[in-house]
Length: 147
Length: 147
DNA sequence: CATGATTTGATTGTGCGCAATTAAATTTAC
DNA sequence: GTAAATTTAATTGCGCACAATCAAATCATG
Image (cartoon, rainbow over all chains, first blue to last red; front, side):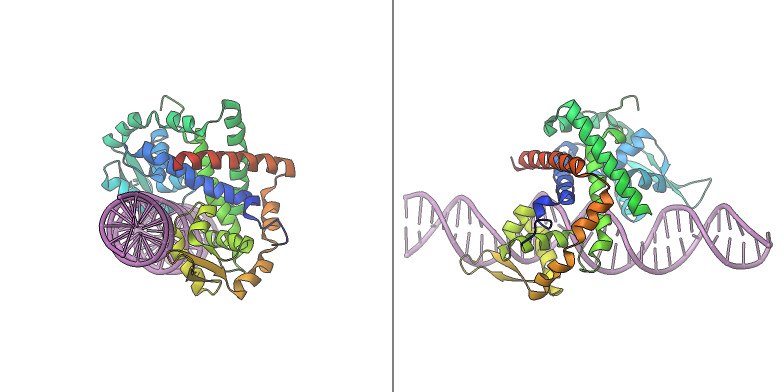
């Protein structure tokens, strides 16, 4: 290859893509006790922040569509973490709520963010800056995809 | 939620995870002409950099295992972009080589990195710093996962 | 009302992504 | 040389991820 611009090591997006998968792997042992996958853990984070929200709203917060969420939430319902029911105000919407087991799981998950941060080996300032860049790219790219 | 550490917006890893998916979406229209997915495009990048490498070596460069690569490479073989054959030196290894069509596709892909960078709206310095942080996290997390 | 557009969730089909297992080839030890 | 360990790719099974499509409910308009 004569030019450099196609070289893998120059691809900023590849590093994001690969890092996302590696980070997911890093969570795996931490999520074993909860018996959930990383995307399921994210769904729990949303519900712990605000219980009983629609699939639509959860998709908005996680940047995921219903085609991904519906089967995942069904698995979590089977596992006893949450239940789903049609909204009484709007029968088109499905509202997702935590079961007692799902609520109790928050205590179990309490230490996960600390354990994860420990493994990242980044100081507070570096982390803050990195997260700010990441969010900037996320918002910018998401906006591009919407339009 | 009384504490903040579980809040979704504080999760650095979530922003990486979501950004990776959004960036993949950004590539979609750019890859239409090549008729490949983003992971397939990454495989092509590797082969354009070095043709005829083993599945093992490709997995090493892309941080992917054979369970992911084998079926993907088969699809790309069916599409006429590459062919696979057992190594003559080591019959356990499968070597992946570009077809003429796969080689010619490099010209078509030539403008993709520029088009993508345009959409990221980042100046050169910002991009450089961001990629450096990303690579640092990738290497650090990957090392953790290996050990 | 009526009816057409919109919103929403479900369904379907395809493509990763990876853990676990299997099978084959090679390497190592003896 | 032969047996055991190792390396490697393939296979299997499950879980996202998303585009495309469909059906149902609701909303907007006249």
